[in-house]
Amino acid sequence: MVRIRLRRMGSRGKPFYRIVVADQRAPRNGKYIDLIGTYDPLQDPPDITIDEEKIFKWINNGAQPSESVYSLMKTKGIAIKEKKNGKK
Figure: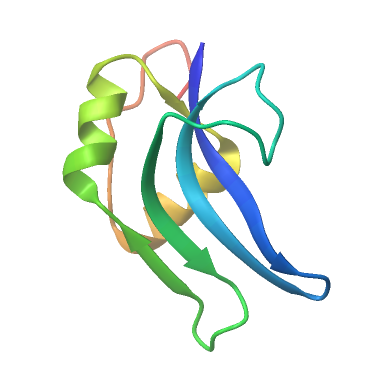
């Protein structure tokens, strides 16, 4: 299954994340398919950039966002339809 998830960058104590599309079996900081955006939690307020066109393309192709990416999308005001069985 393909997931939309965070990839940690930056040095120790200074995290910076890239929002990527990757196979769920790939390691957290391993190979990824596409770069969709970034997330910098150290800014005040946190800096979130997401390419909405790319994220909707991947969701329509069956990619599932992780819980952390889903909450970042909600913070940014990007809404996706919820399935009836309770899953995202």
